[in-house]
Amino acid sequence: MIRYDAAAFWLPGKTLVKNLVAIMAALALAACNRSAEPGKAAESGKSIAVANAGFEQITGDGSIPGWNTLQHAGPPSYEMVIDTQGAYAGKGSFRMTRTRDQVYGSIKQNVAVGNAAAEWIELSAMVKTKDVGPGGWKLMILGAKADEFSPAITGTSDWQRAKVRVHLPKGVATIAVGATLLDAGSGWLDDVQLHAVVP
Image (cartoon, rainbow, N blue to C red; front, side):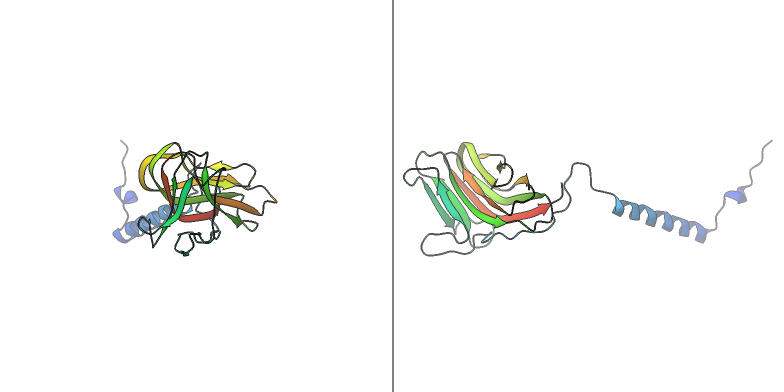
């Protein structure tokens, strides 16, 4: 007959508590040191300055400080203004409305990225739409190896954050960032952010 010595398996109360605390601390430390999920971007790195990113600077002549507006060709086909009635945050947002048939209208600015902390750049902004056709309202990054656009936002939608990311080849010192309307309707833009990121 096999006998078990219960005393061999018994731990005094204080020892048991100490062991449990040590185990819990080790588990917490392991969770903190866990790497990011595969395929998920690391936390945004260096923020890259965007002029008048919240469209708070307003002029009396209709220009938009820090930004350039343009269209494909022909007579003016877009209303491009700072909208003081429909901002996501603060006093203003940018609104573009197509007033006649045209290929595209855009707002953009050139941004220096020569000191970016990573090989990838991510542009994000709050956007909304009203009656936008299938071509959509999109964020854009121009001037890297290839131009990149966010997925088209169409129809009528409330404020949401759109994003587009591009690989930044060595030697690229400046890119253009902004948004483009490729169909009828109106698109809004606010809280523009640009970051160097680690994929």
